Amino acid sequence: MRIASTVAGLTLATATLFTPAAAYAADQVTLAKGHTDAVDVHHIDGRLQLRVNDDTVSPAVVRDPADVTFQVLPAAETTVPDLPSFAFLGAPGTPIWMLPQVQDPELLWPGWNTTKLSRGVFAGDKVTISLVGVDGPGDVTLFDTSSLGVANVKFRSNDGLPDRLDVPVHTHAHAGWVFSAPGAYTLKFQADATLTDGTTLSTGPVDYRFTVGADQAAVGLSISGMSDEHQAGDTVTLQAVQTPQGALTRYQWFSKRPDDAGYQPIEGETAASYTFTATRALNGTEYLVELYDGDTVAAAAEPVWLWVAFPPEGGSAAKTVTATISETEGALVISVEPGDRTVNLPAAVLAASGDRWESSGALQPVTVTDTRSAKPGWTASGQVADGFRTSGGDTFAGGYLGWTPAVVQQSVRQGALAGPVAYPYGTVQPHTGLGGSAVLASAPSGAGLGTARLDAALLLSVPTDTAAGTYTGTLTLTAI
Image (tube, rainbow, N blue to C red):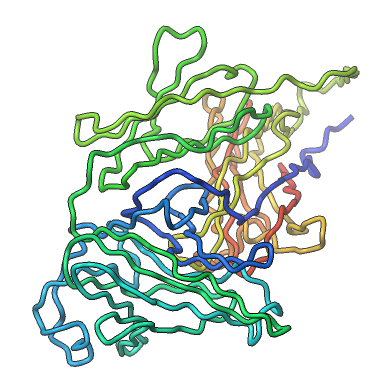
């Protein structure tokens, strides 16, 4: 009996891919670097509210403005340019502290956001955001520039307040925030709207605290992302959170299993986040992270514990399938362990570019075994042909999911090579992500004999107008 060299139809269910709604956090924080929707307008239980969408952590969280201090770092200091179109900022060469309209990764990037408001609720599908007061040592100006470099002032404190700005729903925007002097400021923002039935709503003045040009205090470090309990197979993403957020970016993650004498560094994990798969073997493991200034530990977080649930009780049955394969023929098989057949990506967060929701995770191991003595070589590929959908019928194409393949382990002289990066549609052109067949790995003719373990880093990237929800899709893996 000849064994076919192609095994197709192996699928992975991909769940909880996209849930942009951020959790609410009530701790006091200082935000100094990264993206945040400082003036984030919500309509909840018939009330208009102002919140802060904190995208400096992953996943993003929603905060009360009273719990946030916005830090304008000393690096924001610049001077008024010698251009007539910027005369509203003062005399050329005058010192100012500016958070620019285009993101600078070394500074805070605040904006305003109405993407959480539904269409058809407000008259004209718009709300009004106003700067109604400024208390501080200098003047405050918010402005943006056109593609031709023409400045357009949105809010300006030195010529009288309030200043009002009509903002359509589903708007996400950024501007330059300029402070004329260092020190502590309180900006009072207010949102107003009229419902389609004529009812008027207002948040009233809401205080936003800014510290401009001041040196940061000692950094505190904590870990977010650990739930009270995880299920085996869950993707866990731990995030190091600096308070206040500073310029240091080198970390080291450590783990300590119940039987370990002490904490062990996790090799290669030196970024602000650490992602791994929860297993019962890791139950009770402690994780901590340290932040470094050169070779000196600048801050260390309190450890967090991983608790992994026992598998559900109940009976189970298994069958043993035995096949006899001719030694001269052999077979090519692609397989996934049962516990790895569901991939749960964390809730999507706003990308640094501000125009896409993104989430990342790991494919989890895929095994290719080739016992064919002729060694014809093989190619393993994947495709999300039918896209993703919610239970309510919202959809997006499979091409918005991409991957970066890797060969994790292989037999001696097997010669397997990882496939090229498949970028999500719309991020790098020309690319269609996993909407079309994308190579995970391959072995050339004359090689491939043995077993290879493959994996891939997944990246989901969809436009910000994608409907919120939990999306599910099927990734079909094929070896030929």
